[in-house]
Length: 444
Image 1 (tube, helix red, strand yellow):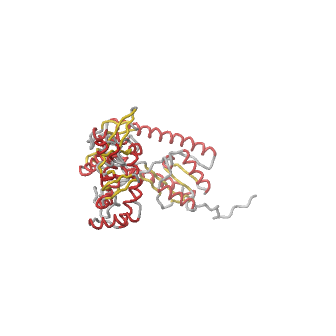
Image 2 (cartoon, rainbow, N blue to C red):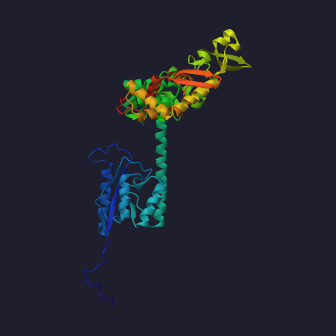
């Protein structure tokens, strides 16, 4: 006969600390006194209470993610839960449904690996299974596959809805373009910002240079909602078809519900410039623009030289010639005619080289000081340094304007080329190219 077991003795029950995790994909309804997260938690807490005889104890910490997708693991509540699991504070993870924890099969595999490494059990109260068995893991993978399929179907529906709305010209959210504000899912023009947008389009049309334009805008303190416009931001603005009144979806533009800020004619002119690379723009012929040294170039004896050209075999050849050569013949002047491109390049090379010398920096600083312009010597150095890398991007007309601004005269002789600079022009150019003013005026 077996001896009777001692009275009042039993095997101790291990306490299992249970953490409840809840999630909702959208923020809709979260402001209510009793919302979806509360409903999930209430059901999970009741289940934990029903397992009290098995040693289940509720962890008081709330692990809630309201307004977070189950398609990734970037959720604050989930990260907090994983941190407590790795710290050894949780034994069981309880959720209402499996897709509350994740809708991605790959992500869930990562979570299960973390659970197993830390001897944590996972329980879904509406889908009974145990992840510690092979059958439970198979069931889990099947459920997850359907959850991921459901997520992808929902994504396709959302994308189709967005595409249909864009075809109707409806604004579907995202960063609101400068020049507009959003109200009732519609873009409305903000007139003082729209005026800045038009001004930027028109000035790009005149200068043809993004580098020069952003420099001038920065110097004038013009910003886009408090942020200085760089070249990337400028090109993005000039390419944004929203300003034409269009709604764009996957590269296709549809008529939008909102009002246009830029008319089609201005848009077409700006984009005809943008279609040409900056280097190609700078190297185009100067036939349609004033000659670079017109009114500035003189032959020996102070004889003025005038631009001229001739065509041979379909090619254009440009020159500067003296009037005496035209009237009196080749013997009237030792330098009667010079190739335009050759002398212009010589002048430009000398000019760019001169502007980098300490003597020219000092001379420009004196001119700036004499003009009473608000620039430091450091600003002058920065301004003159900016011109050299900027030059090749300028339109010929803008290059001609700068040469006319800086050069008083160019004297040609049999020995070479000598440049006389305009002091007041140095001060004006430095002021145009100066760094952004400290006291900015903003457009928003």
